[in-house]
Image (tube, rainbow, N blue to C red; front, side, top):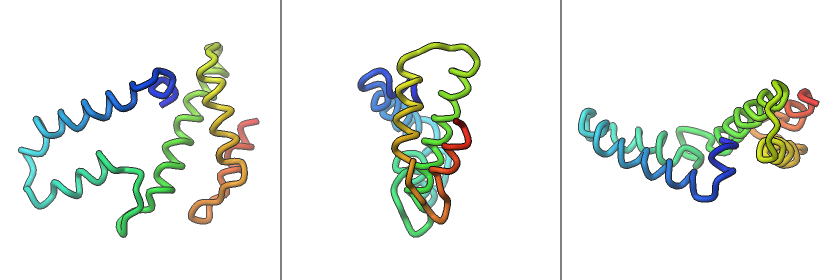
Length: 111
């Protein structure tokens, strides 16, 4: 995730490629009735629906990106984009409580 965000437009390019590949290779193999549910998880994964808390999914995805950046830096990889991503995510979730989870406390545990 930090790598995708460090190159302008890369995340959109990857997302477009994923959608194209799903259309060509996956959707034709599964029943038509399942396709909208699969699209929800692969194309619109961070939106709230009656089936899922999109805000919580996004927070978990951001936490995974934070941990990726944190571990890379801790293991000696020096990269301004990783430092920026780590700090930005820490600030973003400093006082956030989502679905009863205090994300600020989780991020603080990494200090």
